[in-house]
Figure 1: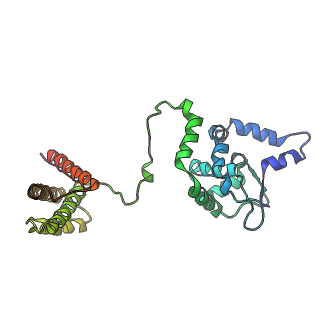
Figure 2: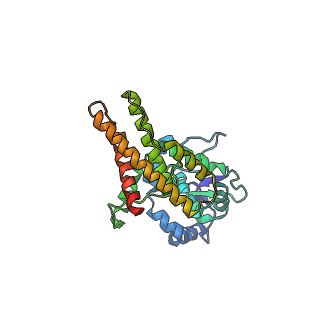
Figure 3: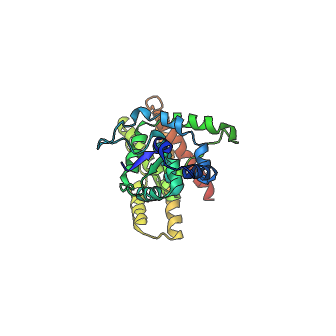
Length: 273
């Protein structure tokens, strides 16, 4: 067995004259890791995953970390900023980190498998309810929070398909979506598709996108053309709605997006003056 829970072996350690473990506990309590450990509701968080905690290791041994240790390990990773392998390497040689996770690693048999961190993370992520987690943390830290109605979100948690919204990208997406809506509506109402410069500007936009560097003159020119196209499309859509008021029924999502589209046009037009 590579490591054991500290609570299982503390009473059997043959220290008679000097209690080194007690000194380690005292130094841990006043260290930065010890202060963080005291502020984390690890037992309450571990109760949420205890039912999913494996009773035995795949090789037949007991699990390396207790439930509280697994949760503590997830806090320890962003604290150190290390990779999974780097975290295990630091854990093998740092007694305070081991106490943070509630384990004691045999120096002669260190953990060599860095994938254990990823395995624990995946298992916890599959059963953890973020709302319940927030309730537990708020119950622990509620008295110390100043702005209790303020919510901060890490931008790295957003969807990966989001990118920096340049003026050209925003305007083109508006034109593209509105053109598809006009085409679908005209087809459904058996109306002729209104003429505009959509295809010409699409070719110009594609040529612009293929260039690695964009000059200010090219950006201003394309932005002006996109504004003109969007203005014409909005006018065409309004005329179609005026003729087929009874027959056109937009969904809530379409209405919301159309409102946002008009707001983008208003803001871009104002900044273009």
